[in-house]
Length: 181
Image (cartoon, helix red, strand yellow):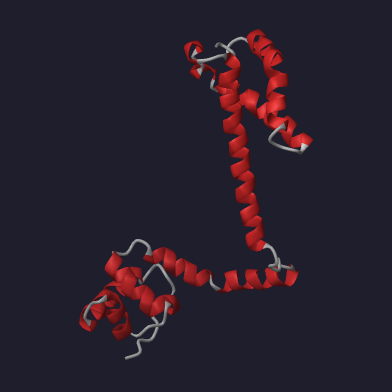
């Protein structure tokens, strides 16, 4: 089919099959607006996939019903996902203006720490892991070493290297936290 190349051919195809497609759709959905949208979507999908139609495998309408089934099924999946997501937030309080102000204050307060984390991103994994645990998560070097499964001496060396690498990038407060023994 050359529906996408010949507007007159598409119009004739549409006129031949629109009633059958509409009946197909309204048997599956009860909202008239959704039925009209799905019918339009079906013909758009048919236009996009007209090159896949093979006359030897069946009639135009059979092929079009296959397209219609796919479009309707996709819509059902979409509404199911939407319903699931809506039910997940049902009963939860949405943020009011005071909540937004507090969130903005928190974001501003953490700006320096975000810069430090951004600077740490380019460190080697071992050094970054120790620095994050000590500087961000406030573990001692010994605790960080235990969490990473390395010796305390190794953790101290990695922490020293990470601090040196970040010396000129992040603020001293974010990187040079006091070590607790």
